[in-house]
Amino acid sequence: MPGDKLTEDVIGDRFGVSRTIVRTVLARLYAEGLVDMQPNKGATIAQPSLSEAQDVFETRMCLERQVIARLAEKVTEDDMESLQRHVELETKANIHDGSAAIRLAGEFHILLASLSGNKVLARYVDEVVSRSSLILALYSRPHSSDCSINEHQQIIDALRQGDGQAAIDAMDHHLKAVADRALLSSTSDKHRDIRSILDRYAS
Ligand SMILES: [Zn+2]
Image (cartoon, rainbow, N blue to C red; front, top):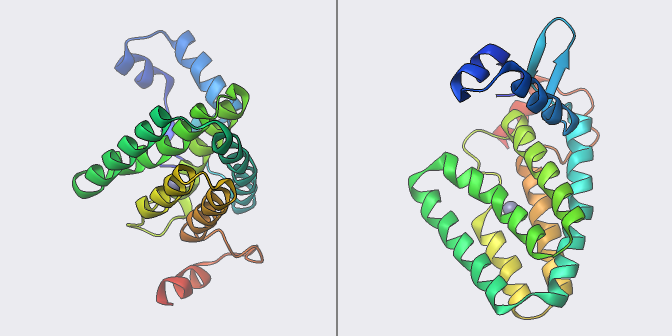
């Protein structure tokens, strides 16, 4: 969970690696915005603020729109098959294994980005998807998975029909819905308190 301590000794011990390696990895995760580091406190899992969370989702929308625009021009039958297989895995996991379902949902987006053929784009999507998972862990309603499998299917269907604009619209709609489910949609909500959170559960 965001805020949890990442003790170098414990991590090194569990993975059977030196503290130097653990430190290098933590520094990389810090650079990617996934870990916080403070001089005398050591590393903790990052706790993105609400405004940072909104920035991540805004960036994610720009990047993934471009992923879909590129894919719409070059998607192959093999690509379509691996996307379809992935959504089937998500459907199975959704029934049996909640944590696998959340991981697979993120990996669907990473798969799309890697199929786009643009490695720079894929790298940034990978980062914002990981940061989104942290944000969802922090702000999401309990028991909501971050991605709806139906929405993933709609994106694939539009790509299969060769309708680039419909695919981009489906991705836009999907990411807005994810942000919405994560309670990030109300931008005026600068001073969140428990009442405003409970109000939305009640509605
Ligand atoms: Zn998704």
